[in-house]
Image 1 (cartoon, rainbow, N blue to C red):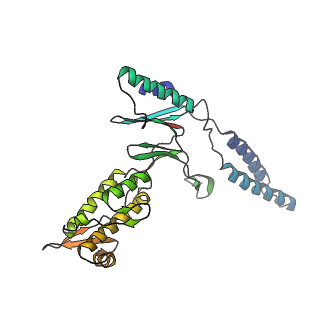
Image 2: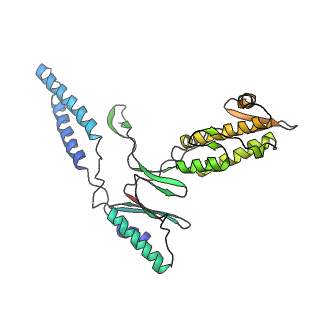
Image 3: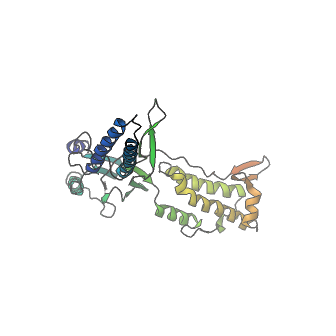
Length: 304
């Protein structure tokens, strides 16, 4: 793959987008006009300057609709790849035809040299914006609409605005995985937020029930710790697990979820105190750490 990458990679940087460049030239001209009219108190000059400034704002807003670089630049190509065990994910900045060519070459190499066959169900070509499944995550290209102000280090004055994020590859938590996990663990219906308790756990001690729920949620939280927006992504599952735990305790003590929650709530946590040494077991807090997004890319993903 390293050799293939060296053969495929081309160009140092993308060309400027045509629309972006045209608007940049217009903005440059209008700004020069405003600078030339500075200090002139003539009413006509003031009117002309105001029109130029208004036009600059309109064009700057319109410019943000277009990419600064040409995403279809034929002279700029990149190939990225990652492998874990027998799973491969290849990212390509290029055309779909080039992605199909690389797919066939790799398939032929595996069949001929290694006598291996790829999985037709799990392999394919996907556009980066649509995303693809890889190791339980969804790998997807993301562009944010939010615009942020840019300051120079030596000045506090705003000198430009730019998009906060464009064509960034992110790891996301797939909805189906969370739904399956919720069903397998017996928390309830993920889509409808309908809670269930675990009848088979009612014979356990309170702290054992709490620790068991903790272990289940800790496992999935640790696995998806690399995902973007992991806190928001797991919030719904965390809610179902928390109240499934409370419902299990309520069923064990022939009580209600409200009474059990009031009894064991301490601040933002649910705490069970047991034993002669007053052992305190706390349900895992609803805080998850998210890693930064991975390197930027745009194009197609070839998944094996």
